[in-house]
Image 1 (cartoon, rainbow over the protein chains, first blue to last red):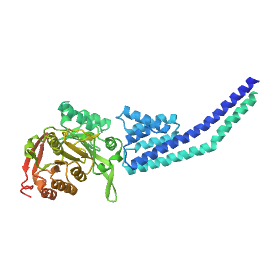
Image 2: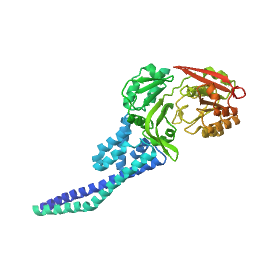
Image 3: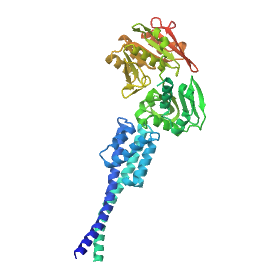
Image 4: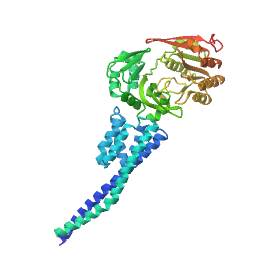
Length: 173
Length: 307
C-alpha cells in the first residue's frame, strides 16, 4: 500500500513537473525578450546621447546585472577579443546565432537581433536610431506574442501536467 | 627600435583599419615602398593605390567594392561611426597613431548643413610618420637664442607641414621652451590615454580634439605657454586666436595650405594673418618625389614685401 502511494506521488509529481517546465519555458521567453529590449534601449540611449563607441557599450553589457545580457554580450566581447580582425557585425550575428537555443530567444527574435548587425556602428546616429527603433518594435511585438502565449497556455500546461499525473495514477491503480 | 622598424610599424598601424582583403594587398608591398608610402587611396570600382610625392601607384588586385569602403570607415571608427560624426562631417576621421582617413562620398544634409556621409565613394588613408630632424635646417633662423620667431609653414597638401611642425615643437620643447599645442585633428601628437604617441619633447602641453580657435584661447589662458602651435589654420576664428596669442606675447607656429609664396600672398586670409604681426618667418616646403626641401624667408615687419 505504501509503495503504491509512493509510486502514485512520484508519477503525479513527474507529470506536474513536465507541465510546470512547459509553463516556465514560456515565462523564460518573455524574460529573455525583455532583457534584449532593455539592452536595445540602453544602446539607443548611448548612441543618441553621449555617442559612446559600440565596443564600450558591449563591454558594459557584458558586465550587466541581467544574466541574459551578461551571457550574450559577454560571449560577444570574448569573441571580439579573440578575433579582432573580424567585423563587429560578424561577431554580433554569430554570437546571437550560437546562443539562440541556450538563451531560448526563438527563431524570430534571433533573426531580428541578427538583422541589427547590418547597421549597428556602420551608419550615422539618425540612421542607426531609426533601424534600432524598428528592431525594437519588432522585438516588442515578439514579447507581446510571448506574453499572450504565456497568458493563454501557461496555466493550461500546468493544469494538464497535474491532470495527466492524476490520470496515469488512476489507470495504474 | 630603429627608424625602419618604426616606419613599418606606423604603416602597419595605419592599414589596420582596412578590411582583410585590402590589408593583405597593402602588406604585399615591399618594405621600401611601405616605408615611403604617404597615402593609400581607395576608390569604389578602382584598385588600391599607394601614393608618395603626389604620385599614385596602382596595387594589382580586384577593384574595391563600395561595401569595402563602408567597412573601412566602420573599422576606422571602431565600429562606431556615430562617435565620429563631427569629424566625418568635416570629411575626415582621426586614427590612432596620428593617421587620418579622408572621407568622400554623397553627403546627407539637414537644414542646409551636412549631417554625415550617406554613401562612401573614396577614402584617403594618410600615414603619419615622425621625421626627427625635419625642421633642423630651419631651426637657426626660427630661433635666435632664447627668442623664438613666429613662423608660418606653408606647402601644398601632403607637403610635410605637419611633420615639420611636429619636429619643430619637439626641438623647442627639448630645450625647455614651453610649447602648447592645439591639436584639433590629433595629428601632431596622436594622444592615446593622455600620452602623445609622437615625441614632442618634455615641455609640451597638448589640447586635442578641440577646435583650434577655442583650444588656442584656452591654452594661452591656462597653460602659460611661450610658444603656441596650430596645424592648418584656415578659419577666420583661427585668425582671432592667432591675434589673441600674439597680443599676449606668445609666439605662434602655424601651418597653412598654399602651393607657394605667390599663391599665399594672393589670399586675403594671409594678408589678415600678416596684419596680426604674429609671424616674422615663412617656411616654404617643397616636395619633388620623395625629396622634401625647406626654404625660410623673413617677413619684414611681419609682412612679405609684396603685401
